Image (cartoon, rainbow, N blue to C red; front, side):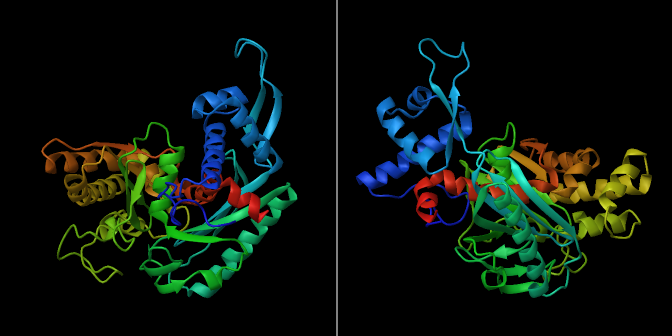
Length: 403
């Protein structure tokens, strides 16, 4: 796939082409693709009405997209949808390009392929402890999983066009280098030579991909919100006017390493009293008197629902710590909403009361609403795959040229 029209990093969309005839055509092809993807099936006339072009111009663009395998013609529209002769309904192709997303978690690896309609067409998940493992064996296993998912997609007649990888750490701007991932123990790790998938590669922080998934797939999510991705580690991402706020070096959102108690326990990041030491998965399990391990969050939810006092006390403490850490972010940034995602979102019924109490009390009652993600722990993986899909919608010409 050729370079997209937008910034290389997902969530920074916006074409920057000169107003040449070629540039205008590429933008218009993108507008057609986005209209059909968001509102289809649509007739040519309906597309023309939505994007403000003539039907003749849209028909020319549509024919090109059909030849490229990006749009399907489904046949006449259903009767009753419009007055006059029915048009032929268009939809984004169920075969053709797919975006591949992958996630390196502290306790798992995951890969999925998403088609242009937003449907997951292939998926692989492996539970494995990655904390303290060197990057090479982890990424060899991830590469094998990516190849299996790509093979499954190709057997179904689809073509993988890009790979985006979510990692629990800081990723330098416009690179594929994980500068620091404390919960993995990785530093200055360039993923490109270790992930030999043969696909164009993007690497980003898992909280960023989780926030983009909320923006693109979540229901009722505003364009200005703070997304908290909470599980073994805790990250955050701020979306302003529908775009990620990354910071000067791309390191914005390290909520888990905001100190909530200056003299608290030491943290792998080198600090003390960080939020993760009170609200991360391991900390909550420890406070509840449980050993870390697979399925522990499910056990926490079961025990909390059954009224286990120790578990509920641990979750109240985690909620309080989250509220303290979020206070600074909310006071400084004034988001319209806070969205709690990640694995801890399933514990929201017991986290939110103390979180909201702390946040409201520390912001003079001006705190924004806190909502729970409907995507749960799948957010970063889906956001990664959809970022590739969005690149196809933004630059259909690039995919056609690569094909």
